[in-house]
Structure formats: structure tokens, C-alpha cells
Image (cartoon, rainbow, N blue to C red; front, side, top):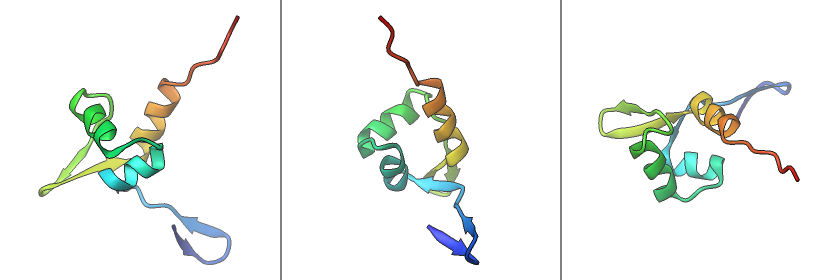
Length: 69
């Protein structure tokens, strides 16, 4: 993660599939399947496929579950 000054970390917005898989804790093919299934939107930049961190965070929030008896 890049830093700007001591107290203001800069977080990038778009992640490659490899970086997204590390961020989400999933395999690269799992991330690809989520893209193909329409679960996570993507940005196409030339030949590159990039994922917005806001969309990844949204996907995590939507898929949270809580254990109940």
C-alpha cells in the first residue's frame, strides 16, 4: 500500500484479478467465476480486467451471514 505522508495512507481504487484475489482471500479462478456470473462488476481497460475496491467491499457486505441457532 502506498502512503502519502505519515497519517494519510493512499489506497488504490482498481485491482487486477491477482490483487483482488489476495484482497478477498479467494483464488484467481474464483474471482473470475464471480465476474462471469455477474456477482462482481468489473472495469475493462484495454485488455485488462480490473475490479473496483468499492464493488468488492459491497460484495463482501452482501454475502455476510450470521450464525443463528
